[in-house]
Amino acid sequence: MDNYGTGSIIVHLLAQPLYRQYLTTNAHILDGKNPHIKFKKVGFTVSTPTLEESDAEALQHYFPERDFVPLMEVLATVNRHTGWMGEFQHWQQRHHHGRPEDRVVYAGVIGIGCAIGIRKMARISHPLSESELENAVNWYFSVDNINAASDRVLQLTDRLELPKLLRHTPDHSHTSSDGQKFEVRVDSLNANHSFKYFGKEQGVSVYTFRDERDLLWHSLVFSAADRESAYVIDGLMHNDVVKSDIHSTDAFGYSEAIFGTSHLVGVSYASRFKNLKRQRLYIFRSRQHLDRSEWKIKPTGYCDEESIIQFWDDILRFIATIKLKETTASISSAGSIPIQSSTGCIMP
Image (cartoon, rainbow, N blue to C red; front, side, top):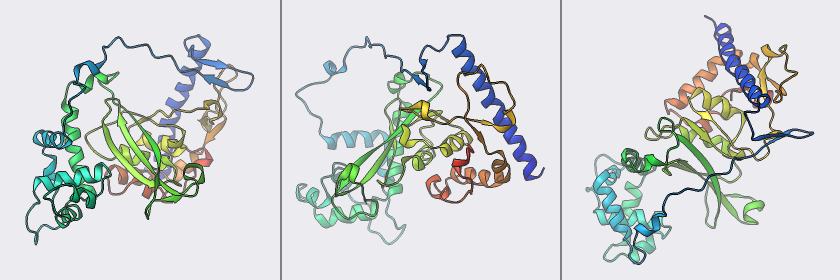
């Protein structure tokens, strides 16, 4: 079958469920089954249901108030059960003089993770030398090693029963991501000026991914000038420990391209909008002759079916590339597929 025929089938498969969802949504409104939506003279609003107060007893009574657990003991205990330290391997397979001692790795993790700094950490960690600590960090603390160590901790937490009690539905995993702005006072390739957030200074965006069990399973640092939505798919494709069935972001993590891409990678995208009535809704042009006079929620634009059909092979190549982790979505989407989201197409 040629590319046009395959693309036409895909458009049909996408148009059917979208149309049925319009029917379901409007039927619930007309039947009074959706009490959260309110219509005004112009547009509509959706109110968030109030959360019920939990009857669960506070946990602070179960923990000592005057005793403290040293961070070194926490790291050693976690390492004993997960072996995360084994992931810190030398960049070179040969021509190195063995692994550093455990205390050196612990000092490096604490110095970087607690923003103490390597030099200061070496000065306050007797009898650790500065050269010894710097050598360990430079040759053993690669991004891949740190991610692999983090995944080991996630694998253990994923097997525990207690965090699973926080899941609303045991068979589905709901994840979310959000960004924070941090001022950077040193030279950095990621830092950028933003008067809104940093005044005359520079800063970066730190984008973190969590699931409903509060597992922090990925984080990214990028320029404060970049839109967060470009990195949502990067986090969803990051590891094989936390699998997301439904993912939520705020408006900064939203774009039309993310809807299409998340659907193709098997994740339902449920963004949270402050002004939902301002968002443009789409339907496929093949459904334009349907009677929508009684619909309360109506589409205002059409998906670009011709672009989907024409570039379907490129779209498949794009999705296969990021699912195989040959590259990230934020890099490969920068001009690799010549379909503009402004056309109303649901694909990137």
